[in-house]
Length: 283
Image (cartoon, rainbow, N blue to C red):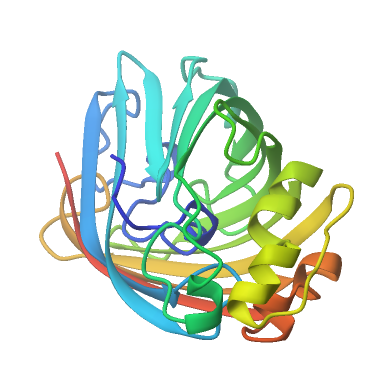
């Protein structure tokens, strides 16, 4: 499910109300861990109006996660993942690989800062790529907790930033009971030179129009590191079905030459906070 406003960089704390399907405990021993399932979550997020901004906006948010014919798919913000490897019975290990697609909306709408708005909107970028990961269920606290390592690669299919984004991440989640789940996620974004030039550079014409300092971003590099916490509580059943309420909080830190950009250092903030809450239903 792709949303019209939510930036892809803000997805980490939106793991609300959708714990990994393979980590969901059940009070019923007859529940098939590989059965078809679908979870839909809707809610809202409060986040910077652009990446690096110190102005915050409220926006709707939604997520889906499902398994059909033992193939898992899920969204995070405007990014859609498919795990093309069927889940197996490998002693709690799950190897993941598949395609990923994203609609990047950074600096396209909801820009509140007058100077940054004067730089003009950036077109939506449609990105395609792939991801790989490995996850282990039954690691520390119980037979149902889950630790995962993933790396995704996205490439601009048009000529908006004509570059790439690589995102490594580590996630840990554990059920607190058959109705409650909590977790942490740590991720970073490594971006190509075209990305930095498009979203963080200020041309001479842009400086004249906005009053910001002219700024050139050269080369590639790590743009952001982000830590997120999330929790969910089922209201009508257990974590494998029914209605749940969830919330997440994320802190991100802009790095290096991206934090030094005038849209961050001069008129924004390198510290990036985001909160989200919503309801989810698992069928």
